[in-house]
Length: 442
Image (cartoon, rainbow, N blue to C red; front, side, top):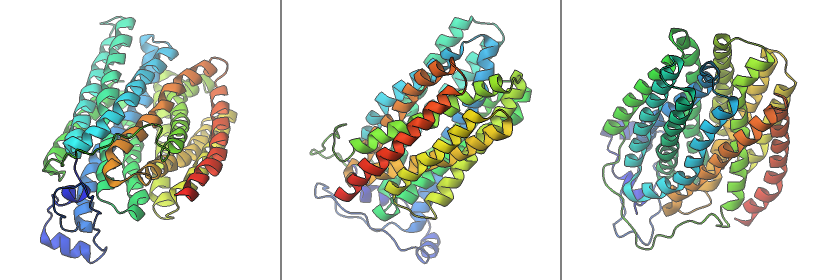
């Protein structure tokens, strides 16, 4: 397996960059494991870490961009083609199901193959899956293929997404953990999540601006952006040698007492994040009685506000206030609770968007705090495996959410948001008691 200082030594920016950067922030020397057969390597300067992580952000921005554009344009297109609401839920559920099973695998593989190859695989297959989605939807809208064929092909395309794109976040989180000291971990991972939030903020805006040229045009644009991101990461992401494989590597278990309390919280966090994303398009169509084109544009604005709120919480609340991840895990669901309650009560666009904004502030905190809590709970040579398991448990919420959300939505559009507010309240109690105990035991 590759040790952190082995990876760090590969980054080689200019001497001028090293001098200017080291004058601002002191260098960090990563710990060396006894099982590492290689000698320790030189320190990593702040300039080297900033360059590497900055390039990595391209991968995460691209993933966030594609995710929110898809959520923004798919509900109206699906109804135009003739797909049922529950079929849309199944399409997302299949992807999440694949994500749950393959994310831990790719996390472990990144410990062996290196972070960069796994990240490249993720971004490359993201381009393939998004391009396939665009073609299938185009064929469906033009009645070239049947509704059932559209459904089957969309499920297959999203399966590719779940199997291969799940490699990216786990490897990216491990890449950051490799290059940051423990006291920097929460803020650094918040920066990674903020990159996803930036892409998520831009995505609905691109969708709203380009959907007038064709309902599937936004997906073609994302495909082009993801190909360019792949090229940039391939050329400039600094990692040029394979990690050392350790014979004494121990596979992390789901029942690991250091991790399972945090994983349970992560599954709940996934629920809170995905319920509004998957339902809000249908909610605007039904509650506000909008036509499909207007709904797509309104939905783009609503998701952009939610994503910008998440971005603000990651850049300001998490990074500037520097609160512990355990405290952040208690604060976040309280914001979501209030936001979802407001959405359930909302009967106009402004109220609904305000509720999404508050919920976005909360979910923006959940992800970096959750990832930091997992990362800080394991050793240096377990980062990739732990990140994979963390992403897997978070994706469990994406599997359960459509089953709960669309079943309750048939009762009334407001019922799923009332349910998610109750889940948020339970998470507040859980974080306060169980995770608080885990913190004091460390």
